[in-house]
Image (cartoon, rainbow, N blue to C red; front, side, top):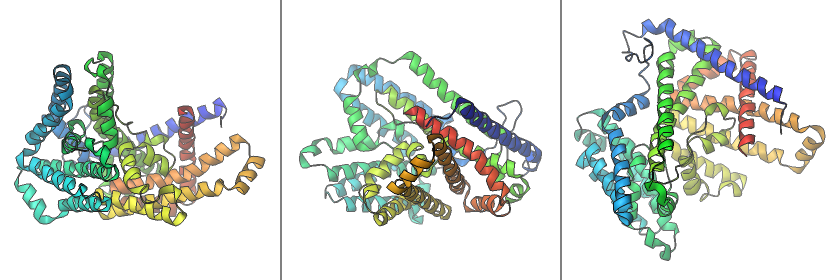
Length: 490
C-alpha cells in the first residue's frame, strides 16, 4: 500500500524532528543536573570535547573493560588460527578452532572455569543419550539454576580476584546453556542414522567456537553444523575491502554509542526518581528513546564483532538487530531484534508446544511458557517477570486482532469501505498504540518496574488525554516509517 511521496516525506521529517528535539531536551537536562552527580557518581573521562561520560550502564562498561583487556586480542587470535589452519591443515580446520576456543576459555576463565563449563557439557551430553527431550530440557534448566545457588556462587567467586571475572563466567555459562540445549534437543530429534554428525567432538566444536562464546549471539546447532559443512572454500581469501568496511562500521557504532552516553546521561537519570519527577514530558520521551536506541546500538557492537569474525571464517552470520525506531509491533520486535534468540525460542519451545497452528488456548500456553523461559534465563528478577508477562499479553493481543481482521466478514467490510491508503493509515494508527506499549515494556526490562510505573502515571494517568495523544501522534509517524521499511524490504 503505497502512500504519496510527499506524505512519506512528511512522516520522515517529523520522525527525525521528534528524535532530535527530544534528545536535545535530554541533553539540556543532563547538563543542567550534571554538577549534582559529581559527589555521588564518578563520571567517566571525556572522549568528546570535554563532555563527561555516563558510566552507569553496567553491560556496556563491563564488555568495554574486557575489550580493552584480552578479549579483542583473543578474537584476533581466533581469526589468525582460522586462516592458518584452513590454508595448511584443511580438514582439521574445525578441530583447530575447537582447541583454540578451549585454550582461550582457559586463558580468560582459568582452569576452574573451563572445568565448570566442561562439566555442564558432559552432563548435558550424557542426558541427551537417553533421547528424551523433556529430560534434556530438565537437565538444562537445573544446570542453569546452579548459578542462583548461594554455595555455588561463593565457590565460583573464590576462583577469581575480581567480580568482573565472576560475572564473565556467569554470562558465558548462561549463553552456553542455550548452546548445549540446542545440541541435546537436535540429538534427541534426529534418527539414529543421522547421529553420526552429533558426536561429542561436534558438540565441543559448537560449544567452544570462540566468536560467540561469551555473549552470543545465539546460533542453533543445526544452522551451525550446516554452515561449517558448507562454508565457502574462498574463506581463505580475505576480501580486504569488506574487512575495512566491516571494521569501519564497528568503529562507527562504537563511536555512536559512546557519543550517546556523553551527550545524554539517561542511565544516571533513570537511577533517580527525584530527577525523573523534574523532567518534562518531552524530556521523558527523549529519555525513553535514548534508552532503547542506546540498547540497540550497544548490541550492534556486541553482536557485530562476533558477526564480523564469523564472516571472516566463511560462515554466514545471523542478521544484526533491526533499528528499534522502525519497530511497530511486539511480534516484529521479537523476530527482528535478537534473531538468534528468536529462532531458539521458536524451534525448541514455541513450535514443540503447539505454536500458532494450535488452538487459541494452546497458543496462550505455548507463548506463556516461551516468555516464562526468557524471564528465567535472564535471571527471573521481579521486573523481568513483569516484562515477560507484558510481552505475552502484547503478542497474544496482536494475534487476536489479526484473527479478527482476517475474518471474511471484516475483510469484506474493509475492502468495500476503505481504500488501500486508508487501510495503511489505520494500520499505522493501531501500530502506534502497540508501539507505545512495546516501549513501556522495554523500559521495564531496562530500568525496572518502577520506571514503567513512572511513565504510565505521567503519560496515561496524569497526562490524559493530551500526553498520550501527542505520544501516539509521534509513534504514528514512526510506524509509517517502519511499515514503509518493511514494504521496501520485500
